[in-house]
Image 1 (spheres, rainbow, N blue to C red):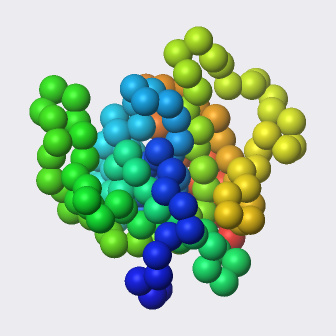
Image 2 (image 1 turned 90 degrees about the horizontal axis):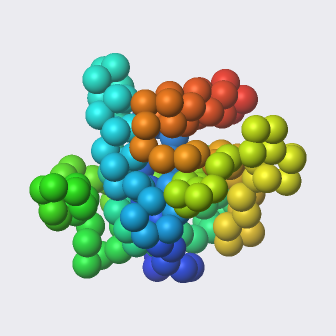
Length: 156
């Protein structure tokens, strides 16, 4: 991957779980950083690779039909952990995104059986599988990992 400038910056988190890049989007205070930490911890506890790419502001751009995410240079390698504040963590400089998880607001609930168009997110002209999650609970973490496993099965 070249060091090209991102097409746009999103209020989101990006992380690598195994070989799959994941973009977490949601309103401020929705738990993106907590969910990022929980997912990384769970995947690492299973003995697999997991790493932050960017917390809070993520640059994304289409490259050769794929969506590439990069951390904002001013906050690369920094994760906000409630109760601890801004914390330096290991990070990757970029990743190809394979899926999007949208965290719904506190008053919303994910659709039980989403319509086909609700299962896709289009960013910078690249369509990715999409899941809506409620918050940072063990159930949400398990649901996201199950979702990613399904994507891995389709891709291999």
